[in-house]
Length: 597
Image 1 (tube, helix red, strand yellow):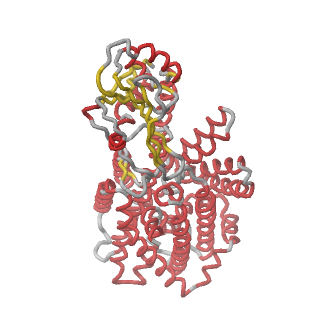
Image 2 (cartoon, helix red, strand yellow; image 1 turned 135 degrees about the vertical axis):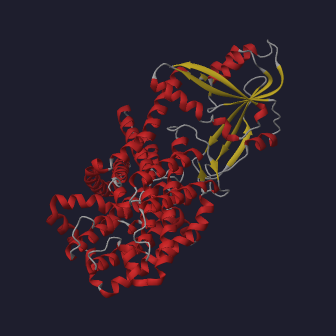
Image 3 (tube, rainbow, N blue to C red; image 1 turned 90 degrees about the vertical axis):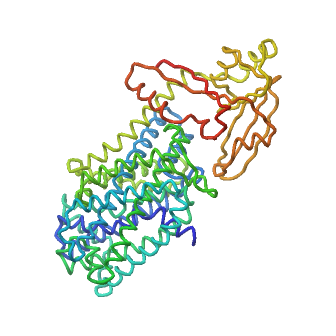
């Protein structure tokens, strides 16, 4: 139960606050007749059931790597099955686009969630004519506070947010039930006949409506993206509860809308008519819930970027681990402030939630479609034909919703594309730059290295003490080690190659010397589960290693090409991998290798 409540705080804020604006946006331009309301409610029910419950809670969360989820994970799961370079390129490109769209969505989500909640102030007597500039300023202030507390870690945030979300979902359920009691006939919307009938009678207009209906499922992707924070089961169990609450509330709003067709802020007006004096506490609770909605997406962004770092499609941004229990509960400062800057820009550019709704949904449905394609492919390769068949159907639905959102491009949807282009450009330039760099800096095979080492050791003046050299692989020697020892003739009396390996299992730890490679040359290997936290300096001390110097490699890229200049800039502003281990700075010596590209 404790983990389920935590998941409400981390994962379900976004989709849990969609009732604030979904029906309000849909019926801005659609006549709220009983048949239209029932048809839209039916579309909402089946969208939540198929695109969230089936696609994410069932299919997607059954696919994980090291307990993590997301398009990057699907790419990593697919690559071992692919034989042609063309297939690998297609899967990688799809994953890169999906990740970039999700990051673009991560910017719009906090903006629309917070703006839609603070607009509820306009229903408080005396505040009806409050200037929109004040609401924009308040939303901006809330965003700044939210992002400033991220460094405390999602574990601490969840402890505060989980119970608040329980209260929020309880309020949603109660308000929905109170409205439904008078007209329980609204539950006939569960019948898919009404969704099909709505689409059939409205034609192209009904197709446009799908682009707003999808707002009810935004945040569904967080079920998969945030899986590494808490594990699959707490998230899936919590979703069963959230799904029921959302349906109750949407049905209740539907009843209220049929009775009050002029309603603009449907949820807030419904609660105001039911609770009266309790409206202000509900409004404050809704603002708190939208802050949590933003938190769900921010946590997801940290998870996605962390996956991209570990799979080497993004540079090594500084990662702070915020939980002694789970390594995946992390904080990435660069990502945090990147999101904050653009969230503030979006809030101040669009100014009203219904304007933002015109831009919202394109990135979400694009990401959903790519998830569906990759899942479908993976299930087929694994010969899980039932799941593959279901994934085909779900993917076709995703693509239908994505197509309907294409009409939003001229009305602000282009911002989703522009925002997604930023991470996409970084991913493409970094991955292609690394490939080109690796072709230029070919590591030396261990056997070849040992042949040269044995010829030099003892035959040139050696430096007293012990030197450590960090290498990614035990079977290959990085160019910087070759340059240091052979070109610069820097060989210590004792030289130790340090390798850190991550297991596919969450727990397990070992550290030990391997066989002596040659006189004065040994290999030390640290092996740890991906959830293990460890202090490299302490491990070396316990192994009796008293190093005098620690060497690591640093590549300096020089180029007249604007693309590779950008790659060089990325390399300069992001930390080297060795700096993550927090080794004593007075012993570190970076060996620069200059590369012309």
